[in-house]
Every structure is written in C-alpha cells, then in structure tokens.
Image 1 (cartoon, helix red, strand yellow):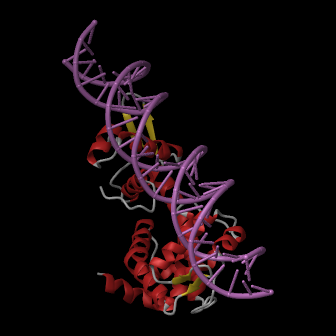
Image 2 (image 1 turned 90 degrees about the vertical axis):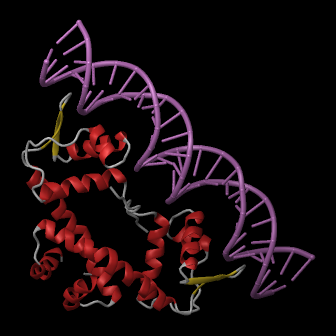
Image 3 (image 1 turned 180 degrees about the horizontal axis):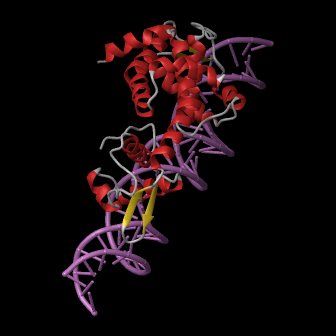
Length: 118
Length: 118
DNA sequence: AATAGTGTACTAAGCGTCTAGTACAGTACT
DNA sequence: AGTACTGTACTAGACGCTTAGTACACTATT
C-alpha cells in the first residue's frame, strides 16, 4: 500500500477500511485481517495497525474479540457515513470553495476540469 | 493565528502568504514581515518562520536581501497561481470527487449543501 | 495438554516538527 | 563608529509517528 506524507499512516489505513465499509466490501460482523496479517500485507509495522484498529474501535466502526480478531460493527455503515459526511460538509467543502474562489475557478467549470484529468 | 494538526505549521503559514498573493494583498517587490516580527505576530517560533520563508524562496514566490528582509517576487502571482492550480487539479479535485462518490453526493446537490453551511 | 493463531504491552530508536535560547554576520541610518 | 535592524547558524529538548523486537495473555482446535 502506498502512503502520502500529509497524514499519519495509521489514519490512512483507517480511511481505506472506511472506504471498504462504504462500498459494502466489508459488512457487519465480517472479520477483518488480524493485526499481523494486515501489517504484512500492506507492509507496515504491526504497532501502526494496532493504532488503526484502536482508532476505529473508538469510532464504533469495528469491535474485537480477544484471542479471535476484529470485526465490522453492526452499524458500521451508518457510523462511517455520518462521520465522513460531517467532515466533508464542515471541513472539506468550505476549503474546496475557498480554493476555487482563490484560483478563480467557477462552479460551471468543474465538469470540464474533471474531463481534463481523465 | 490558529493552526490545525493536519499540516506542518510552517506550511500553513506559507499557505496564508500564498493566499495574500492571490488576493493581491501582497504585491511584487513588496516587503513582508521580518522573521522575528512574523514570529511574534502569529505567535510562533522564529525558526518556524525561517522554514516558511526558505520554502517560499525555493518556490520562487519570495526573495531575500540579506540584512534587509524578504520581498514578494516579481512573478509571485503567476507562480503561486500555477502551483496551487496544479495541486488543485491533480490532487484536491480527484479526492473531492472520490469522496462525493463514496458519500453518495451528486454534483447537483453541491449548491444546496453550500447554503446549508452558511 | 499442546499448538497455533489471536490481541496486548513494553522498551528502544529514528525521524520530522516545533520550541527555546544564544551567537554571529550583513545592511541601513545616524 | 555606533546602533538597530535584518537574515543565519547552531545546540538542546519535547512531542507525535513509525519501526523493530520481545514477551505475555486469551481463544480455538486438535
């Protein structure tokens, strides 16, 4: 897995898991990779994965059974959706509009700009 | 000045200066605050401001005269615009669309959502 | 009971960032 | 020449993140 420098690795891993929940690739009570497995597969230190899982557990997105593993929480989808949506509306969207304004990009241009990327 | 934890402080200061350039509040050959002045006014360590200025100088947005101070570069506006625009198109916009897709937000909803914020 | 897989806890080290403090070198002004 | 600004350089320490390694406790399976 590739990481960028703008955010702590353990949070980037958490984001990826949240994505999989939102895409319904991970569903309620489904077991996720063990700390060691995950660490190997994404080439990261086990301690970093421990942080990720502790963080996701705090958010109520996963739960654990000692000696067994970590599992997706019952209401993980709703929790994740709420969490990400609130962040999007309160943080990302305002920053996005501010940047557009600074760069002189109009709302109507957005569709064209997307095409340029692809 | 208030800072968030997602980005190094010296880069947040750099961003603010870039903003002022784009808003034309800072113009070519205009002198900016000295390292010590800036440090006091935004309540940050002088060394952090040194980092900011070194970074902006690398980007060609400011230049220095030893013993005199730092100044806005001749083509600072264009350089800043290019720099920020490229980052916006290559990094922010794709992430923005991906998040929208994950959250099930349609392009047409964006205008309404903005109103909710204000 | 033994084994192999879980999560957990701990120490140690490296790195980037930020703070604190001190000292030095260049420039402008009087 | 003296003074008061500039930028510059350096050491030292604190903090968060990450890595490395070891050891222990719990659970399921045989």
